[in-house]
Image 1 (tube, rainbow, N blue to C red):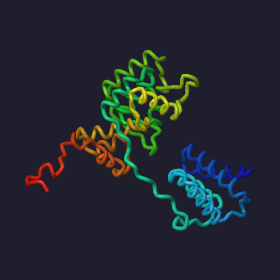
Image 2 (spheres, rainbow, N blue to C red):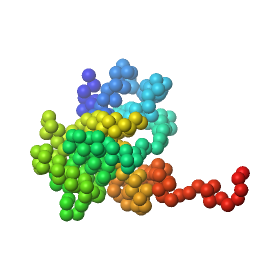
Image 3 (cartoon, rainbow, N blue to C red):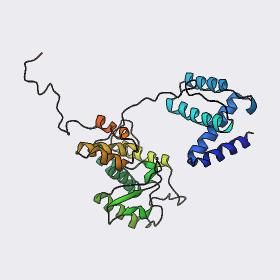
Image 4 (cartoon, rainbow, N blue to C red):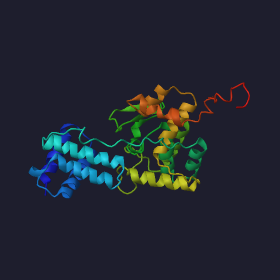
Length: 282
């Protein structure tokens, strides 16, 4: 049922060069919305969307999940049904802007030391030392590593813009050890041992969390904490924020400026004005 609708969504999304993961999400979320309404396509109204999203909000779903539904149904209504859509009447939910989790240098070292699997250790080290997202590290190929320029060519990025980032000498040494001991992969750098294809993001998060637990870290962390820590530690070391922006591949500098708020101010030499106050105690 509705298969012609999903074919139309897929075709319209492909014309706009949307990612396959986004297309699948649009189809799945639209399928769920249609199942919940139980109405024929021709009978759908804007009020149906409002009722559906209001129900989801009252059920307590996260703003991120709510906005996923919103984006999918909005695309369906505007591009497929050609119905009027007013974002003022059906707004997205404001996201909670929490600060990213940054690990200390000692915590990063402890996680790496706790990781005994050589492939996993090489992946964690690469994410931290070069600031890669987990989706970027699993898509690395052998030829993306440049010993000559000491850079990593990052493809398949979130913004769809290739970039270069730095390659640490210590990381290169570990990657070299991994390459010789783990099958000398010539295409995908970190292939799945089962399929030979790309690893799943979830599997990387699982072994990262397992290593963090072994290292005695009890707070909530994920593999993305490596990227946050890379940026924060660079900033603490005095690296210009625009260089950090380029290394991370951020289009908007405001995305990078969050690390100003999470960096260790003591290492930056910033002192409270009260410590410099020459008067007596209040």
